[in-house]
Picture 1 (cartoon, rainbow, N blue to C red):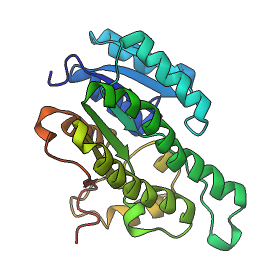
Picture 2 (cartoon, rainbow, N blue to C red; picture 1 turned 60 degrees about the vertical axis):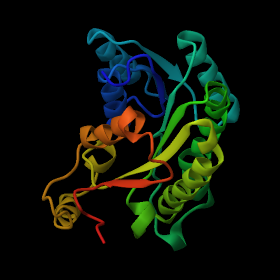
Picture 3 (cartoon, helix red, strand yellow; picture 1 turned 60 degrees about the horizontal axis):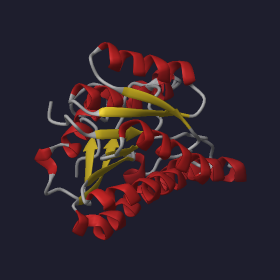
Picture 4 (cartoon, one colour; picture 1 turned 90 degrees about the vertical axis):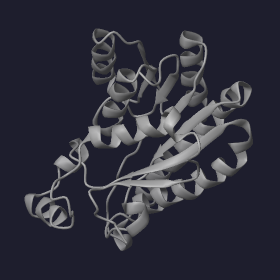
Length: 248
């Protein structure tokens, strides 16, 4: 229980990778704020699973792309648990389209949620972390932010931007005992990737040296490590959890 006494806020935690992260942080001893936008029932299930396992959790609604909602959800977590130690910016969406067909709203919405959302949440939580002079910020990007991907110019831009954003935050906050790092998942089995056609899944698997898709648990364990005492001297780094997919 390496995170006993810590409080984590995980955005987009009602399903997929975010759900896996919330459960893993709780299993390591942290109290968890489970953020969601519309999937209230799924978020309640995550909270129920954590509580059933002896942990503490709170479902907190809020669109991370809206500054006012972010301030409210952070306030809710602080009122319930008294502090926030770990922020995991996981909330993200896709609106895939080829460049020449991409609508302004498809570009804007992905940048708003995936990148601006991380900015709003980090800014709001950083105020508390600075008071505590300790904190862990872990941003969930994607290997697409490193390699690009046809039909995902908006998503790739947002996820690449998250990497640069994290490095800047790491430099700004390091003197106060706050670290900021990025986890880049590769092909992970989630609801989002479940919609891919079989041929696309096969092509992706052929690019993975370890020969299998990742799981939410694979990503979650990297997050738990970065949040824990073993990662105190790691900041501004990007860790790929991708089965070797993007190795150089």
